[in-house]
Length: 459
Image (cartoon, rainbow, N blue to C red; front, side, top):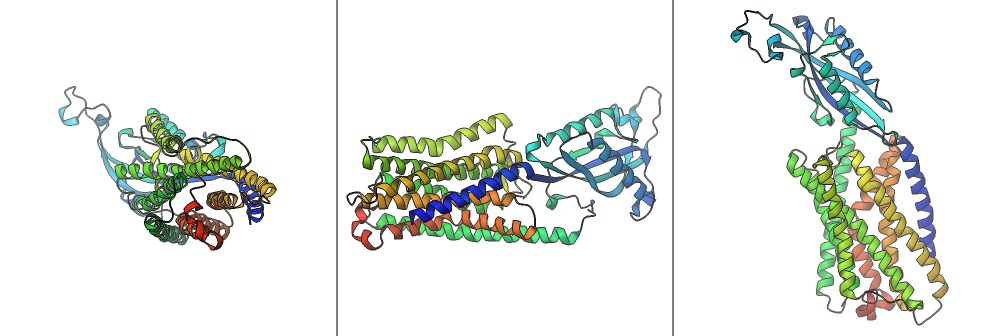
């Protein structure tokens, strides 16, 4: 069994890291923004109401051409105006730019107030994460255009111009009618809803399995476990917390403050559960070394303190530093309408560290399985080794589930991407089911009469 697990780990690990390497060169993030223009040198005409004829079509083409030219200065990103909304009338007086009011003007000068065009447009962007492009560069170009007071031939009343940089399709202004295929948008929305439902159902199953397992472990007096139980409990508490937050995260995106809090808690629980997996893997490996060396373990109290400091302290420190550096801007609603880290921050603070930690788990597990083959013939330690192998197999299963994230970076064909997306969601959301499976494995057959020792030997 251990040999099979080792081979599977090596194969999936190599395949996953190949996909990760591929993703660093091809991972694309995309988004949409709405910007509002008030154009001083385009007086409003009632004919702008007809979006199928000139002069609206000429105005829309002018806006697209001017902004595409403006954004062409940004390298390593594909930015373009994909849709122009309905033109509306805006009463504009030049005095509003200087803070004067025409009715209270004491200089004797008169200002020509008129109705000008105000219009919303949709700006779409795609960029590679590893090419050095930062989303705020769009804001810099926009701010420079506002300082100049114009974009190409379009003269702007800048006090009426706005840019909403991060936007999901669900929040597009109703006056903007994208020209993209509505069927494609509907399919994406349906797919997103299906993935969300699968995620919630699996999280509910996982949470139920953890709660029931804790109840059984609490009232089974024969299973007296010390530090081993402490480590397992903390791992599955973190998993249960993320299962609960998965429900909240997808329903808190309309409240900015609540969404930030949920995103922070979600990040804390996910990073914590990865760290507890590493802690258990390293702890079991040191117990394994103790079987054939004079290695001295830490006392139970010291081990608990160190483990808790790593499992909960590191996520808390990372979150604290992130909040100080970014003033909380790293957390919030992402492009998927999910309360989580924003895309660039998610890669730096979770995805890459997670892959590194999973790599450590798999590397230690492979070393453990290879070395354990050499001493398995010793009957005096076969039982201890069997319990350690159970722990290590559990950690490998959990680690491989996280490694499926690397496959989600494959963007085409869509059917393959959908398969890997659902595989990742199911395998990570159902991790709570491994706890009752682990317990049943420890209490099966020849171990059934030795439950008192089952997990306590791995302390």
